[in-house]
Every structure is written in C-alpha cells, then in structure tokens.
Length: 253
Image (tube, rainbow, N blue to C red; front, top):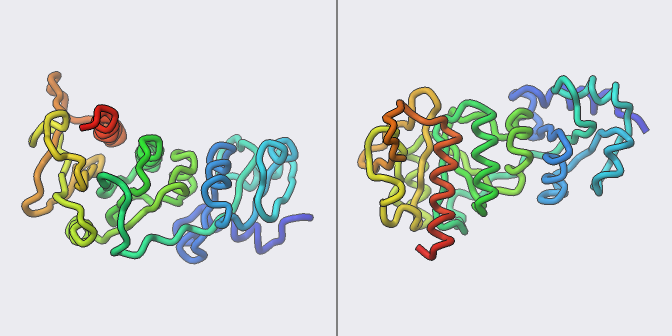
C-alpha cells in the first residue's frame, strides 16, 4: 500500500504554520517523539510512514506505510531522517475554566525559539507537570521543530493559549491560581527563598530577547546570579525554576 497524492500533499503542508492551522494536524518525527505520541495519545494518530527497520521498534496504531529510507528522507524535514514520522491531529485545548491538577502553572510569554520551547516542555514533563500555558507570540507548539525538540512531550501535556498575560491571569484566578509571578534577571525575590512560590501560583518565563511582558501589580521573581551576568537562556532559567519546585516537593516544602 502506498501513500496517496492527497496524503503526500497533506504531509508537505504540515511543515507550514498555515497548513497546520488549516487542517488542525501536525507532523511528529523521530523514534522518541513518535514513541511518546503513540504512548500518550494513540487516538490522535492518522497515519505513520516508516522504514521496515523502524516498523519493528514500535507498536504502531492505525494505518502504516512502509517505505524505503530514501523515500522517507524525501518526505522528512530533516537532513537525515530517523526513519519514522506520523501525521496526527492537534490536541484540543482544555475548556477555559477546567481545573488544573498541578501545584503551580508554568507559563511561557512569547518564547519564539522552537529549541527553547522544546527543552522547557520536555523539562516540565520530566518534573511531572501536566500543563503548560502560552501567550500569543510563543512558537507554534506543534510545529515540526518544536515537536522534535520536545521529543513529543507536548502530546503528554495540556497546553492552554492566551492572547496576553492579562487574559492568562484572569483564567488562572478563575480556577483558583494566583498570584502570577514574572521572572526577571535583575529584580525581585530570590526563587530559592520566596515562600509560597509554588502554592497554586503561575510562574511566567519571558521572551528570549525582551524578557517577560508587563502585567500590572504582578510580583517579580529572580534567579540569583552572583557573577552579575546579564541573563540566562530562557530554557536554562525555566529549568532552574522547575527543579526548584521539584526540590521543594522532595523536601515536603
């Protein structure tokens, strides 16, 4: 059985944001990312394309097309394909007032780099968080680069999108979360000392170039930097905040 022209055209279109938005589908590529998708949300999978070698490494749900390594290299967006990719439906977002099971909410404000987004998403998943909130201007979480970088972790989490930080704050308050802490490289209370930092609150990581946006009355929180360097990479900063949460959990704080 071979891919139809329509399936090939759909696959090609999903490497563009317009194509993903129009079809509400995305491409997931690579053994680890595809494996995470298959494990977390097999119901989203529409069809898989892989080499014969890869077909024996995973339990593949739904329709599967076995192709040559050369053919999958043609279909892939990467220079050297890992031999497997699939087309999946983009998960629906939770309804706005649905509860969040996490003790705190990590939010990304206009994070534009797919690599940073993927690292943050993967780290949040590793720490046991089940949600990730995003403001308008953040990279498409289901773009092929973001999916590869996150190794498919976004399919195991619930993502909520907001027009801006104010709308995010209103939603958080409606489900019992607040205050909203804005991370800042130079001012605010130390993340290692702030009490109640992870007690039904929101911690916002800002844009790589300009930092977090403005939100009237929101407290600032910082990572102490004795070396007085200008700032940390967004993914590095997020990792510190996430694992400070893990440390407190481990110590019953």
